[in-house]
Length: 114
Image 1: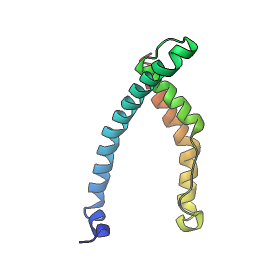
Image 2: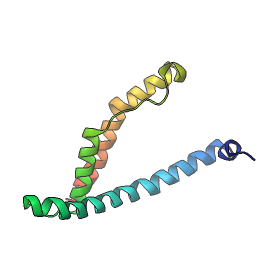
Image 3: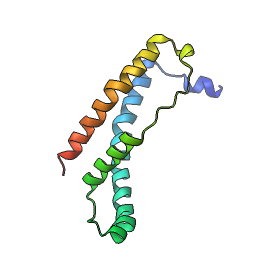
Image 4: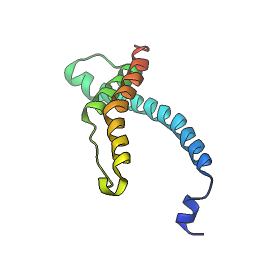
């Protein structure tokens, strides 16, 4: 069995279930880990130099969301002619409407812990 055959085994429903499970487990875990790393780096580099207070994990996560939102850059890996106009339109709507709303929703939840 080749690698491409291995990747395609399983039903589409199974792939969706695995994808959702990974998203629901890895995304929060990655966010907590990122906040923890930021609090440590903040205490090492920012506190001694600028005499600022330590960050809580919720503040670090909010700061991470803010900086990530401001500095994020879209890179198109497929040409628009290959993906079709509807896929391009869906991507544009997602980037213009759903991404800001998702970041705002996550930030609102984080803000509740401050």
